[in-house]
Length: 207
Length: 389
Image (cartoon, rainbow over all chains, first blue to last red; front, side, top):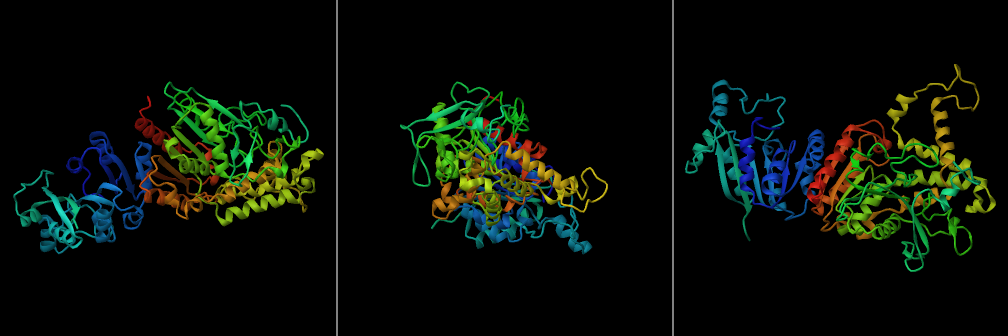
């Protein structure tokens, strides 16, 4: 489900956005690296949901609070305002209904943190334009017929979705192919072209 | 082993080889049936050492026909305790780290007050005069013992099957006293199918002419045949079809050909008969009626206006729910009901489904993934509790 294996920097950036001691739900928490990081460095009350049973078992064996669940189905059971942050790291593109997932996240948590691979990146555009084939990049290694990633979006698409679900963008950042954070003052179109990954901190619009 | 008529463990009822806490007239137990039980006794076993600030106590709750002998050689059967796979030095429930308590449940027959105990009002065994016992009654009685042991908060309450029901009930009744809870191969309510199986068992006991309307002890008898049949039927539900097939298939028992009779030709028949006959040597038939009834009556949501989540509102407890893939008695779906309710209550919950073909009884066995889960969950809880590793 992930984009690239070396996402440590991605996790550190997510962790940076979380306030100390917060209640955090990590949706699609994999083997629990982010939860561990958040618990160790931020002292948060960290909970996770993971779709693969193997991931869940590994997490629980590490002492993390994780349940087996599907973001598309099981977020509905969580109470409104149950958490300070709901995190969806590199998982949005694998959900069946990204809009509904995002809406649930913003209902359950005061803030949502979403990171995803940017389908507007020049390398992807180039592969479609030049080869007429679905893109396979070092970052997105699956062939179209076996990918779990069924709902790709670009950074601009995501900004539009945030608008649609009435979320305010508190913070946004794009990472280039080296994993380095792009200059904050760069315009959207440049992020959308050069950013391989994007990360957004959203909150519900008041009132 | 002391052979005492009418059933070999009868001495364990009144004189258990365990410590016993007696609760007199000043401490009656308010039962769900709406009556006070007094006096009553609880037989229990303890392992390990209570630390200075009394923060390392774990209560283990036994299943239907288990007892307090969780990790020591059983006084009647001579076999290792029912959870010796998980309880002991260096094991997940580490007796070098934790102070472990296990009680015989109310309604049981190993020293805690049950239908085979003497009713002080009559000087005879209670029989069916004992009020019907519920899971909540068992838990309230345990809570009185825990208090008497000087423990304010349990680090963990854990149990499988009916033991898991007790752990759930503990968290619902005494959230502040339960730091963490493991609910293993269990359910928040007994399903129609499970009630049905229990009813078959009870009817088998009551159909035995030696049951004598429940007064068999007065007459020095026991409904061994009925109880054995009950156990045989129940035992099937603890296994999986796959495991039965793997273990027995259609193999014949010590014979080359079928005998064209109703002997135990098949190994599986012989196995079940053995399960039945050894069971009656250690268990009281009326006690079987009571503990099965306690499970049947269990429906935690009903006590909270039909909402299971309401039972765990603002629960400070850290939960771990475990199910096993081949368990068709307490299915993964039942565990998910609990997990959904805990999520809805924003409680801290872990949920693991363990892949195994060993059926419901898997929770009693040394399943590596289950062991790792238990270790990890307890370690995480111990960190949060500030217990020394």
